[in-house]
Length: 195
Image (cartoon, rainbow, N blue to C red; front, side, top):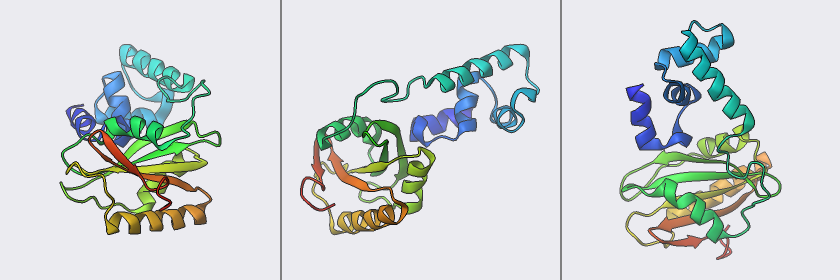
């Protein structure tokens, strides 16, 4: 469980596996959590731990804590997306996150997919679109942080945006925006006509 806590501190809940989240929520070891996922209700657990697992499963089934679940709230502007993504990107190193949206632009998932150094982050389209496919997203908004405090996009940022846009076209999951967040400011490449 200590390993799961460490990953939570570094990546947030969005960057953790199902087994790590289950271990934290139900007070299990990582091995026990994997066994529960593999074996389901037949997993060998004490009655107390089995009760915790059932409670966690029921919360997940109900959509507990899912942004946009059961509401008509949708992300229509870069400022709204930046406000949702900013807390996930407050690190001293560059981080890249994906906001997966349904057809009405409601949030289906928010996940940090890459952490880098203080000046760059390496991002692969496969990680970005894995989030979108897993969430069954209709579209995505990407964002990354500039710990330097300057939100201006670099030439690498623009090239990455182009690659992601092309990948999204192939998959039928459009990239609506790529937002660069630096402290309390941001730059929306869509608002600049660069997406």
